[in-house]
Image (cartoon, one colour):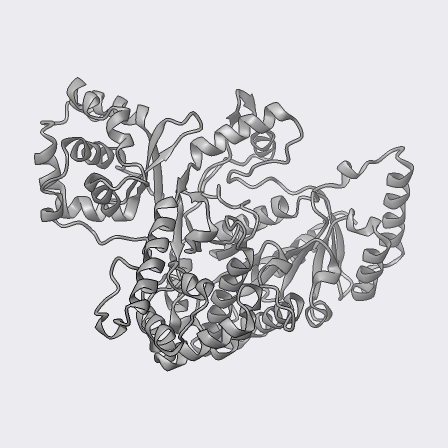
Length: 575
C-alpha cells in the first residue's frame, strides 16, 4: 500500500499531465489545504502551471511570503518540517483580487485589489441568481433597467438613469447596490475574462477571494459565480494554450443561495460545465481541483466521472461517508485496503494505539481503475501558512506576525463615497433632472486613480517627495507586486542614504497624514503613486507599495520628486 515507484509515476501523470478533475475529500482539520497547496506549488515550479485559487476562508493571503523561520521567538513547525525534507521557504508571484462592495467589507489586506463586475459580464441567466440579496420585484426592476439602457453595452450611469426614470419609487436597496462600486463600465475591470486570463498568465497564483465579506456573503458568492461563469464561457468560445489549474478551496461556497434555484443546483451545473470545457481539445491544458468536507457535497454527475480522489482516513470513520466512497471507488477497495480501513477505525475507536490527530495529513489515493496508494504526510508548503493553533500565546504571536506582514487597509472612505453617490442620485431623481446628467466621475466609488503627471506632483509636500525617493531606492531588485515597509525602516534607510534631515522629514506624524480616511491632497497624490498607509500590529505606520504602479509613476515624475525633496546626492547605497 505504500506509494511505490509505480504509484508515484501514476500520481505524477494524474496530477500534472492529466486533465481529469481532482478532489481532496476530508473533514475540517484533516489538512486538505496544507497538502493540496504543496501539490499546487509543485505544479507551478516543476510543470509550469498557473493556478487560479478560489478562496473563501482567507487562508491564501500569505502565498507571496516564504514560510517564516520564527514567530513569537519560537521556531515554526512548518520551517522545521521543510528543513527535514530538504526544502527552502519561498514566496510566489501572486495577484490578489476581491470584489468591490464597500458596504459589505470592513477592511482588506493591503495586497488585495478591489475589482468590480461590469455590465458586459452580466447575462440573461444571471438575474435569477440574485434572489439571495434582492427581492423578486427588485430583480425584475434591475432586469428592465439593464436591458432598457443597452444591456451588456450599457454604462452604469445609463442603467441608473433608466431605473430612476421608469420607476416612481425605486427600492433604496437596489439604488444602493448600483451606487456602491460593485459595478463599473464595460472594459474597466480586471475580472472581465480576457483580462483575468492575462492576469493568471503573468502570475504563479491568482487568488480570487470572498473571505472578507461581512453581512453580504450572498453578494460575494454571486460575484464569484458571475466571474467564474464568464471565465467558463471565454474558455469555451476562445480557447487558449495556458497551463491553468482552477482550484476551489471549498466546493459548496462558490455560488449564492436562492430559494428556487438553490445553491446546490446551479453549483452542480457550473462545476460539471467547467469539467466539460476544461477537457475540450482547445483547452486540454486546463484542469480543476476541488476541496470538500464530504463526498456527498460533490455533484453526482461529477463524482461518477471522477477517476480518482485523495481521501482522508478521517472521512472513512463516518459510516455514511464510507458508504459513498465505497460506492464510487469500488475497484480500489480490495481486501488489503478494506482491512487497513477497518484496522484504522478499530484503532481510533478503541483509542489504544491511534488517535484522530495521528491521521491528519495522511491520505488514501483511490481510483476507479483499481490503482490505490496510502500516501504518508506530504511535505509542507514552502509559502507561509497560518497553522492550526490551540494555545492562546501562540495565537497572539501569529496574529502579530500576520498584522506585521499582511497589514489591512480600512476602506471606510470608499463606504463614505458610496453613501455620497446614493444621496446624489436620490436627490437627482427627486429634482427630476435626470436628463441633465452628463457624467458620473466621482459619483461611484472607484478604487484606482490615474497615474500622476509632473504637474500633479509639482505641489507635493516635501515629506511625500522624500518618501518617494527612499522607496525608489528600497525597491531596487524587488519582484513582488506589493511591498510593505514600516515607518521605522523608512527612517532608518533615509538616514543612511540622505542623513538626519531626511529622517526628520519622515517622522510618524508626516506618514499618518496619508491615512485612508483623510481628505488631504497628499493622500491623493500618494495613492496616485501606488502608496497607501497601513498599520503594524503595534499601531505604527507602514507604507504598502503597489510596485508596478509606483515604478511607472517614478519613471514619469522622478525629476520633479527629487527636486522637490531637496535631499541631495545619495550618501551610500547600503543601509
